[in-house]
Length: 169
Image (cartoon, rainbow, N blue to C red; front, side):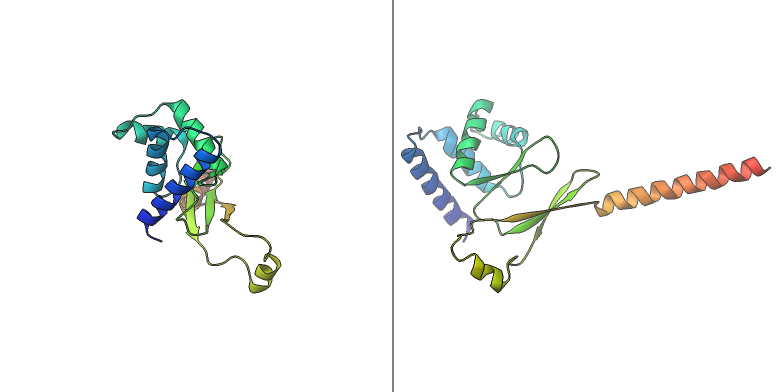
């Protein structure tokens, strides 16, 4: 589904949700939804606030937090806690199922697209359960941090060898 159709779909669902729960349909809420579905990837509340502040549509932090809660409740946004104290969010529609590779050292999060996680046998077991979205968290050490660690170990070993040679003299 192309992005304009996704935006139409989520706007329609959000409108239905707001009406059903008797929430106001404000331009700020729709601007936040539009911004979230115009960008890809993860975001936190500070980055969303700064992006909205730079756009022509300024909103308060309170409006952002309240709107995110509504978007979470109606299933249009997904919340992640990757181990840091800051929550990360991403849009729920228009995303392919993917894994999150999280570095335990630097905290960087990378997305990795995956195929269907469920085998045909597992899918049969899930016939009475409609899957909307799933992701997997994979924790480890990224290549950049591994290279830095190896370089540090090499440096320490050289220093150790040098100190050993000095003591022998």
